Image 1 (spheres, rainbow, N blue to C red):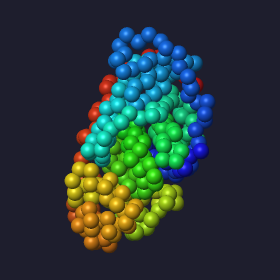
Image 2 (image 1 turned 90 degrees about the horizontal axis):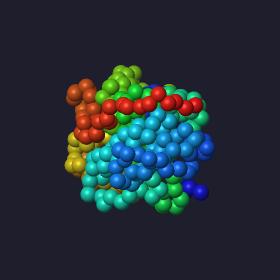
Image 3 (image 1 turned 180 degrees about the horizontal axis):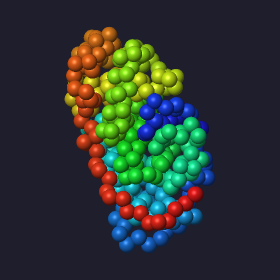
Length: 314
């Protein structure tokens, strides 16, 4: 059905193996039965089916086994995150409601999460799936391991970044390095520090990839190179954010897919090709601050306090 599929894993898979996965079609409910929800906002629709509490908003359909209030909390956070992600990476782009909505499944157990996304995702906290039929989005879905609020917050921001950006690049896949680099900038500072550690270890062992190799990757690298790939990718994205204005990075990636990286760097950032970018980037990571220089994750809303019932599922 789909012309191509974006599959993103790594909300918490730092240096872990990334494996192609498929969703279990019966994992989440397909239809809903309305239930009363006194605290519902006008744009929300609350329902329950087979132990799943479901809340639908303009752009999301959230399913959890905790409570209707918990599904609403996540749904409202999703809407706020979607706005923040679009504002950061796609300023000035006209917004329109998603059709179909993005399904967000908050799994109450690791077993349920792995049934939905596959055993290859054992070291992750979330995964995103976007399927296209031609240039139309057929499926938007995020699966989450429903854990502590800070873990849920970081995984959700990371995975929704993939979903929002996929909508922008409907006619061709976003390069992996750019897709993951932007998503990691939505992660918590603790997770970003782990990626920085992997980058520094790669620089010391001289196991980093050349920029020409990174941008030419059609998919993820070999498992043993995943840690340094993520560290380099987010570092390069972070560096380019300091070289231009808000929204220019997506403009650059779009230009690179059309005209090649060397020409796109000259046109957008006035950097004389990949070799010059590599020289400047290496200088920045060896002499600059010991962190990624970015406008995130401070740009992202903080999730509300966790309030769930004791109800659990399998």
